[in-house]
Image: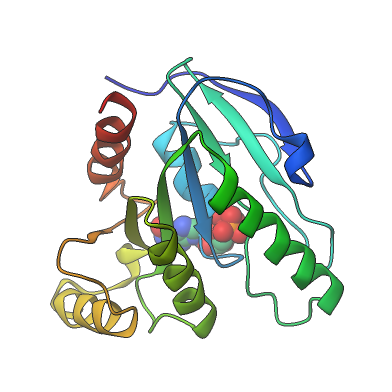
Length: 195
Ligand code: GDP
């Protein structure tokens, strides 16, 4: 089974703009430039999904894509731009907060971090936020193709400790280059949308 046909639904700039539908939603979250678009494209076997890239300082939106009438993929705006005006940071916070706490369609989150580095303060803030909501989450550490095999278990330990992940929190390494980890994320999604 594969995901075949992503169709852009709409962008939301506030909770008034959420699309109306009855499909479960899976949201993708991560720091800007972490590799979120590349991951989404790899999972959907696409070279380019419309409307992903975000620019520093711009008003950011939540983007919704219908995947084969099975679920709706939600691309959350990236965080962690160094030079974003405070106003935009506040808008981002309000947008995400509304979405995470009020969106009843939301069934799962793919939280993306960089496999090569210690998670940032912003990553920790985001993960704590997700823990607080209680929404099922998988931590996907991307760009693992840039890590040597011998570094992986040390890096996994560092990530788990820094983010204070419970034993039962799903974790996988991922690479948009090699496709490693694709099945784990795929299974995480399928379990939630069919469960
Ligand atoms: P986004 O801002 O989070 O959507 O990040 P992008 O998907 O645009 O990726 C940011 C940069 O990281 C680009 O130069 C990608 O080519 C690169 N990148 C993304 N995923 C991977 C990966 O799995 N492995 C490697 N080596 N590079 C990646």
